[in-house]
Every structure is written in C-alpha cells, then in structure tokens.
Picture 1 (cartoon, one colour):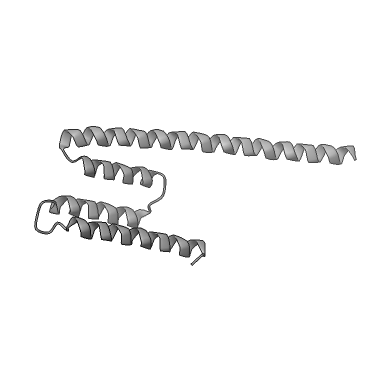
Picture 2 (cartoon, rainbow, N blue to C red; picture 1 turned 135 degrees about the vertical axis):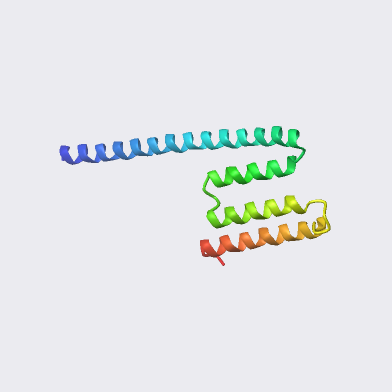
Length: 124
C-alpha cells in the first residue's frame, strides 16, 4: 500500500510541476507578445508622425502583431498586404470608395469572419 501511495503522490507532483512549467511558459509568451505589440504601436506612431500616413502605419503594425501571433496564414497575409497597398495607391483618386460603402464592407467582412468561425467551431 505504501508503494502505491508513493506512486500516486509522485504522479500528482509531476503533473502539478508540468502544469506550473506550462503556466510559466505561457506567461512569458504573453509578456513577449505584449511587448512586441506595444513596440509595434510605438513604431507606428513614430513612423506615422514622420511620414504623415499614421493610419496605414497603425493598421500595418496591427496586422504585423496578428501575423506574429499566428492569427493569419500565408494567403490571408498576402491578401491583406495587397489590399493595403491598393488602398494606399488609390487614396485621393476617383477610384477611392466612399466612407459609407467602406463601413458596410467592414461590417459584412466581420459578419463573414464570425460565420466562418462558427462553422469551424461547429455551432452553425
């Protein structure tokens, strides 16, 4: 009986030690991601103030922090970068879309992403 109790105790200790190590690793990763996001935000503010394109710098740094965290894959990243460059190039031309249409497109995109997430989760 003593050997069984010792084995169970060692198993519980090992499990708790592994959980503590995982918690420490996740905490360190969160601190690194927070620091990277804060650094990118500061970079966007400085670059935007210098170049006069604050909105594009902030959006790109937000995208970059999401890309670093693994939220976007290759196709989504390429699509975003292409759309951002196109938006930058057509700004203040006759091809620029109106603000209301842009707002509608953003709302529809958010609804599409929500619907896609629900499909992946299996709720819809």
